Amino acid sequence: MRNLSEKTTKCKNILLVSPYPVGRGGIEIFSLNLVRSVPKEKYKFVWYCHSIGDQSLAKEYEEEGVRIVEAAPPQDGAGRLKRVFCEAKDYCAVCKSEKFDIVHVQTGVRRFQALHILLAWFCGIPCRIAHGQSYVPNDNPNLKQRLYRYIIVHFSSKMAACSSPAARHLYGPRYMDCAMIFPNGIDTAHFAFSSEIRQSVRESMGLTNMLVFAHVGRFKAVKNHPFLIETFRLIAEKNDQARLLLLGGGKRIEEIKDLVRSYGLSDKVIFTGSTAQVSEYLCAADVFVLPSSYEGFGIVNLEAQASGLPCIVSDKVPPDAKIADDFKFLSLEAGPAFWAEQLLAVSTKPDAERINAWQKVRDGGFDIKDLGQHVTMLYD
Image (tube, rainbow, N blue to C red; front, side, top):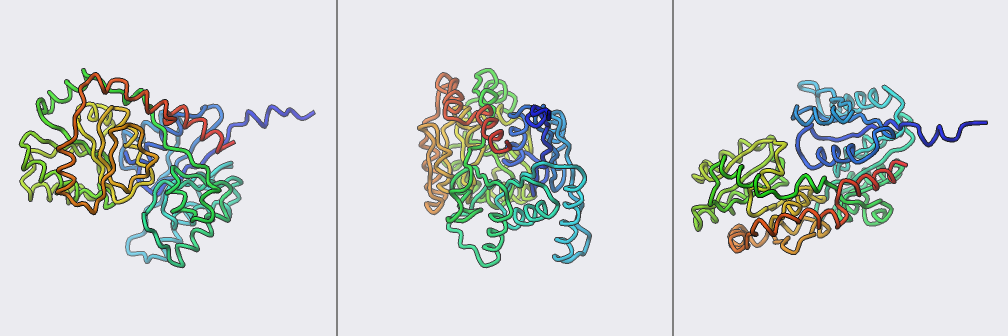
């Protein structure tokens, strides 16, 4: 008689696919939390990504048993069609390199999703999961974008998204309800506030008695750094003790540094670069600010709330991200002056009120354990 237990205990091979370099962005951190949240004896992961931009994060993946495969770099001088062909050829080679049970494509970029879902089907991978991780408000897709949607919907085995707006963006209003919606979970206890860490970080950075605003995000257009710097310039004019922490790396960081210098704010704006110490910097901060042009969910919103920070974010962040009462949405159309006024009016919290904030995030269903349950349902 066939041993039925073999089927239930078989380790599944999963190919995670991301269009981004290995860096400390939202999708990369979510993927790491995903891997940590599920039983290692049940799933074996390979991560196919653009390139390795952060060696320390790559090491964390490897410590979790994930093998990282970098996409072949595009040929110099190659035209768009040839680049797409080379990209497809390289990806198919990875898909056929071993017997994958599942391919899990994580992005809100429809072209990328469509190409990699379709090629995974062509390569015979039985389960193909599309996972929407971003959205664009007031999106009006053209014919090409609608074709991408059609491919995603009809060639994926399962559809998932981090929020309803992200599902609507990737799959369209007709199919968004077919997607499994589950939020991006974090290790809530890791982001618990600590008075000792706060004091240590602030002293080491010369931030004692300062009013510290914090922003976390890759330096790219969607994060709206110029708006943030203009807002902080107005804040600094009214409060000489104000400081701005900018956590993250990316291609546009030098452009933003130039902007900061042009405003004469170099002594008030601190660039940490890509860092694994996000929880420590959030402990040191007084207010979290996120003026993104759009977000699929924004995992950093959970991290900031777990640290007990008052948060002011753009109204392009999905409403699902709000857990705490002092999580406030503002319209970008109101302009930097209004944002500066609202940020200066925020009542900062004493340490005692921040200590247990992580428990509220956990109880809201955003813990890494909840993520593990969702992912297991998705994969099984």
